[in-house]
Length: 318
Ligand code: FAQ
Image 1 (tube, rainbow, N blue to C red):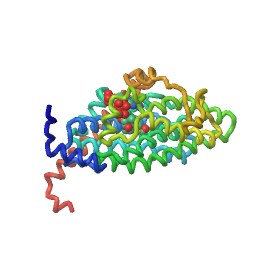
Image 2: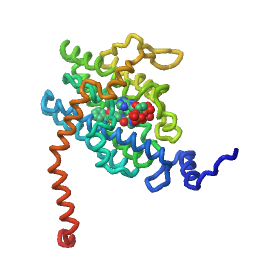
Image 3: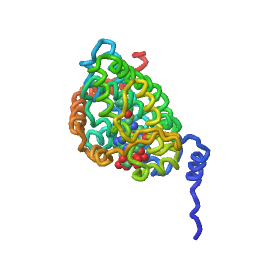
Image 4: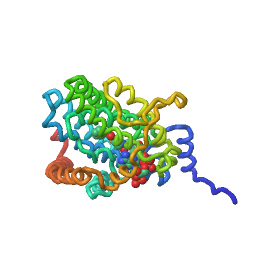
């Protein structure tokens, strides 16, 4: 049997990947590559948008004006990340309206973590430290993603996420060094967020149908389990510096591996959450649909303005 000849376009694409170079929107790309990226980037965009909700819920209750201003800026950054990511996804040929519709109709996935509630002010700290921390761990390698617009968007996103992570850590640091009740509140928050934050990296490698191909295409640079391990190794000493701990009896340093061992995560819970059965899935979807409807007048005004501007004699406007 002879191997079918590869088209010139396919050879060019394969060479870009082999050279660890970048694929740009105008380059030919296999349909599977386009589909995988559209899926991952749009899910990522939806996560940023839905991810505004747990913390936005605390803006009116932040304990000081300074905390309120910082939290507002952080939540606004997440909206910005969603917008860069929708733009990056659009360069692959699916327009933003279609992607947003998929989210509003409940057909698109977004990160499991945002289906958990933020119950206390300490949860806002835990989200910043652990959720943004996990996001950074996952996204720093994505800065080297083979698809140019996604990789470049990630550079700015990661810079902003590292500010978010520090503000979360600092909230917890204050609480952990406050009254015994405040310290307990911080401990309870990280008890709630530890498992779900580790699950943000996706299912274990054996149950991750997309990883192998995404790594072959230099979209993902490390597997889900590799990044999860890197995250655990990073947060254990940080928790010690806070004077807090993770309630995982199997969490211990393994001298031989040079990594922390940690206990099994509840994957039934994870798959339940991504199927729609998490504590807040319904609430998150409902809130997003409401916000979209509330924003209709802004979209209409922007469209009317654009139409007026296009038909106007622009030399008079300048
Ligand atoms: N939640 O084969 P894999 C943030 C799905 S942004 C829900 O391993 P893949 C910022 C997966 O889509 C957080 N679904 O998939 C922030 C696939 O489903 P499909 C978001 C998940 O793509 C902070 C199926 O399971 N970050 O936090 C999850 O190779 C604070 C099989 O999985 C990104 O999106 C999950 N956790 O690897 C905002 C980063 N994990 O489509 C506000 C970019 C997996 O086949 C506040 N994405 N699934 O039906 C990625 O790196 C990858 O897409 C993974 C999943 C690693 C998430």
